[in-house]
Amino acid sequence: MFIYLHVPFCLSRCVYCDFYVVLDKYGGHEAYVDAVCREIDLRFASINVADFPQGIQTLYVGGGTPSLLDAAAYRRIFKKLNEYLPFAGQAEITLEANPGARRSEMVDSPKAYRECGFNRVSVGVQTLNNNELKKLSRLHSAEEAEEFIRGLQRAGWANISLDLMYGIPLQTEASWQETLQRAIALNVQHISMYGLKVEENTPLETLTTLPLAKGSYPLPEEEAVVDMYFTGLSTLAQAGFCRYEFSNLAQPGFESRHNLNYWNNGEFLALGVAAHGYWQGQRYETVPDLQRYLNNPLAGITQACPTREQLENAIIFGLRKAEGIDTSALERAFGIDFRQRYGAVLDRYAGKALIWEGHRLRLEESAIPLSNSILAEFLGDD
Ligand code: SF4
Image (cartoon, rainbow, N blue to C red; front, side):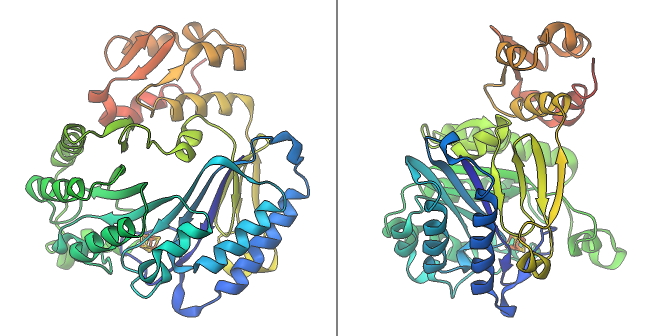
């Protein structure tokens, strides 16, 4: 079984963030852990655990800033989960951590989290340039992020992922190169690099569009952002990182098994407020409102995922992976003739943006910046 747990607490809201976030100063950790434990009881009441003989294969705790909860909170949650299913022997158990949460136990005693069961940490670094960090309103400096990661390594963490961002206001090719080199020097095992998206109704949207503010928030040109993406891929490749998905690169053997399950369109249970799950053929979202979640942890929206949508998701998520999709497996699973069903899009792109390797189909790396329009052609194409 694959499980995602959402923890919404953050010390402050970053200007670019459109996630559901609860400011940590209002407290509520204990009530939240109580509600998560209740949700586990409620969800497992309708799960036949015998269907999961491998136990819990991955658990990913994302947020928010999950490292604001102390290790004891996670001991309680893990104990509750283990009343139903044990962790698999090689389970991947990831905690998202934020170097800006300076007064958290994760900074003072990172070993405590390893001792309670976590074996992978994903650190929201974003950039190692202090001016860019300020534009993102992050609470940490580049040096603090580096020191945080060295502290994790001293405490024995040996599977560390960094989140980096390109396309940040003020960022240049040279500053991005410097961030990449400093990230490489940290000797981590995994790097995710995402293009900054200016989301609607965020302070960053205002700051990058209002005439008075936008001069201070110059976004790199679109072409420069595409160049930054490819600079990231080549620089990290030279340092031994292999791209296994559009935005994710790992040292061999350190690919995120939890995220690979998403891209393989596998089902996963989601727990916590504002969490998105895919379970028993249905997609669901728990309510993005802490008080309502505390009152009823099962509150939310559930939508059936019809077969056609499952097939489209399997293609669109699968083509994000460097290895692409196994079209024979899709033919068996969905009873289709892949080449016939997607003849039009294959005629347009095969041998160019889409590459056949036996019965596998993958997206050519140079076509990734155009992926939205190419992948959209698999939607509703009979
Ligand atoms: S730390 Fe992450 S989740 Fe929290 S406000 Fe910043 S971007 Fe959003």
